[in-house]
Every structure is written in structure tokens, then in C-alpha cells.
Amino acid sequence: MLIVPCPNCGPRNSADLRYVGESRPRPDPNSVSAKEWRAYLYERANPAGVLRETWYCRSGCRRYFTLERDTVTNEFTNPPLPVAKLGKRP
Image (cartoon, rainbow, N blue to C red; front, side):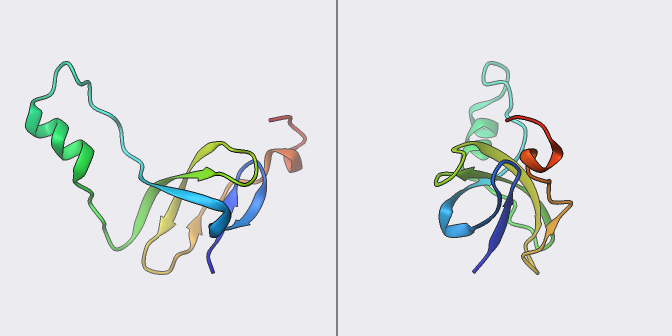
């Protein structure tokens, strides 16, 4: 079981979330070639090490968020604190 630190809800079971994929900047669709756009849409780096990922909290706050995870050890680096614990409203 993988426990994912949601910045809004706190630690959640990965079954409560949806893994969206690798987080990377989107190229301008008006200025890139078809080959570059296809690479952005379908090719993933899949490195062994730290990777920025996007997750969706489907059973809690229903928000998207980005985390860094070590794909070798499944440890999250610099996990965010839940907003409620910081005294701020979401």
C-alpha cells in the first residue's frame, strides 16, 4: 500500500487517489511540430529516481496536485503539509 501526502486532505491511501502521470511543462501547440507534440502526449521518461508527478484526490478534496516521488523507493520528497494544519483555508 502506498500512502500519498495530499496537500489538502493529508496522508491518503493511493486507492483513494488517481495517478495522472509525469508532470512536465506543456509546449505551445501552435509553435511545435507534430513530432514534438506527439512526443509530449505519448512518450514518458520513466526514470529510476526522483520524478515530479501529478495526482488527483478523487475521494477527498477532488483536486489535482503535484508531488516529487522517488520511483525506486516510493518515498515522497518534501511532502506538503495539509493546508488545514497550516491554518489556511483551501
